[in-house]
Length: 365
Image (cartoon, rainbow, N blue to C red; front, top):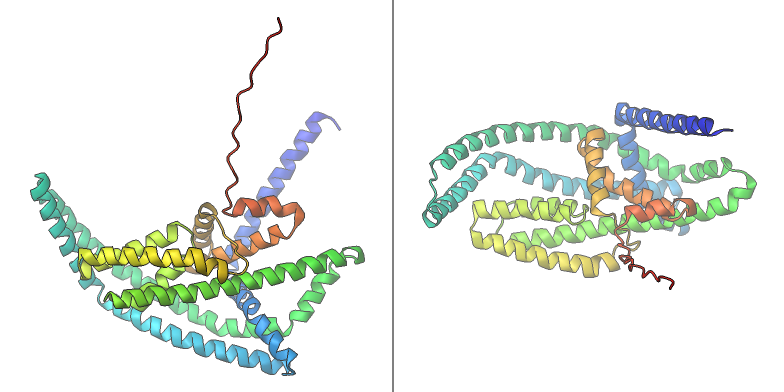
């Protein structure tokens, strides 16, 4: 095989890969109504499987154990969902008032800056009045669209419990099917990889969920003590954004600081920032090492890329699924020898900088 044929084969291979990726993402987009609830169900089933396994071990019928766990999970999520929905409803109703208060706070800052720096504020006031109207109209319509989208999630809420029940029930069948796809020589390494990946993925997802609950309680408690409105809703939002390392917490706390400026005072902005710094110290030095058992960390670059791609592919649901799916992919990569470099690329472990010392050339006399 000559050089031209090798080059042609490499072009064909690259084109085949690109076409395959395009076809895959097209299929994922078209079939999102089927795929998204199924992925949510798989993640929930992975988290609940250890509890079901424990109940089966103490001689409880598998079907009964799965039913009990799903009912308890639905009750807990329903209570939390009702609480959050009430907060969102209140926030939607008071949005124009919040914009008005925020505009007033900005206006006061402009007046102070105009007097201190001798700047003419008239143009800024005109722009501010125009922008305020656009924010109220566009944000109100966006909130309405979000509520419609959330309404679409209720359709998934009827499918997900059924999927979770069936996945937990047929879990031995699914594992046996995966084993049957490979020959006898590969069974040992395959079983080890499945066992390790399942253990690490369960540890990560359970730890991630526990971290989210702890942070939501800490943030909501801090905001409630500081007298910030919608403390529970804001605590949940900041905790969700915390999944995106480095960037997410900054965006979340910036929103809370803006709300504190609009409804309270500049001093409350400082208090919110101080509470955020304290909670982040607790998260990074205690919660992550102690609670997130697998200590899987995705770097900020790929976290942002994954969330943007998830939103473009599946909307808000894709944003929620992007980080867990990326973390699962990293765990699989880390437990597969040929794919370990890709797992390293997704992580946030920075290698030491390699310093190349300039060589000294010796000239022969």
